[in-house]
Image 1: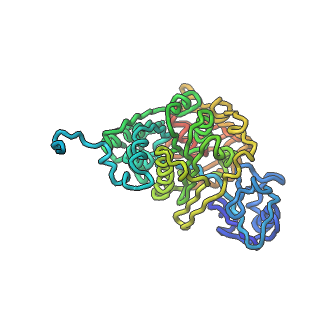
Image 2: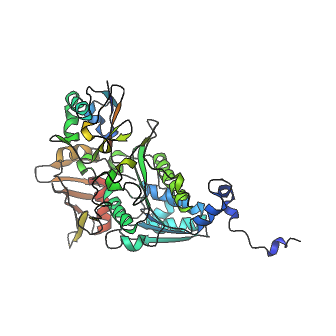
Image 3: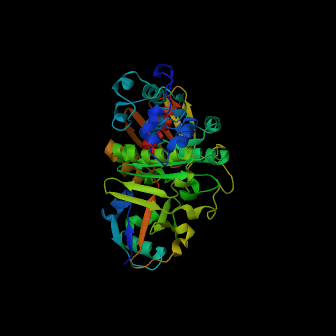
Length: 89
Length: 352
């Protein structure tokens, strides 16, 4: 099953986990399954059916916006990463 | 016959001999560094490490912009400052310049104590070969991005929180800009800041060191060695990632680098801040695309003390200041008349 990497600021909404297995064959399906497992994360990631503009998603280190966005295919051994912008400094 | 040593002027390259011997830099690279000009935006945690590296490496002219004063809790990670600077109430840019001149008297250091905004950004960056991000908020980073793209100058983004950080080198016209990669900053309820989530000095030093090496490559004319990815490091989890973002260049409909719409530079985005006369308070107005989520903000801020909120406002007090925040992002900060201080407090406790 694909693995989703959870960034530090979202871990409180994901039971404290940093990696979660989620079912699906596209980014949309994988993140939807993640939302079912951890409903608190759903609202943080999605605004209606679309992903929030400040959330970037990568499949194996590739930004999905130059692949097929939420329809980017995800294989069983792929890793999906949710990457928020880091503000401090 | 060789000239007597006493009449030979010291070779200005001598003090840099250990990095000149590094073959990828070499003497030509060092000479280019010594003839280069850098504008450093922000002289806090990232900025002090950046300034330290670049002054020691021999960057010829270093302009350091910062709006803030030094406080004791800065000393944990802001490596150019000490307790005497705190006691002397020195601005960060000035204290940094004094220290850097002791480190390297052969370079020019120009401290600028000001709030970098759309009125002065182009002037402060126009003569630079490179712009560096030592800021702690996205409002200023989008302003830097606008100015760098408009001026067609390279800049290097860096951000740190907790034990993790990100950095990316931006070459306008060649690589995606900040708005291509990070389309919009997270709204305050969803973004931790160093004040709410903490930050480790070594994490800042790692990200600033990545930025500094990129700066050295760029100024020395070694462009082929530059990083083209979004780098992410977490020192606590011991992870290092290179996220591929170069494919975004030209593919995303970027308002900044594709349509040349400079929202921050034109003052259409970002904060509009005014002192509230006679009230010892400043209003910070930061336009938000969506209303703030007070329950999440309250949860994030509760470690600081009592946080109260209803549908119309959220109120909390910390460090002797009282914050009243409204859903549209506007905030009134009581306890100061200083606009720069209020903007700093806003970035620290409400968010970028």
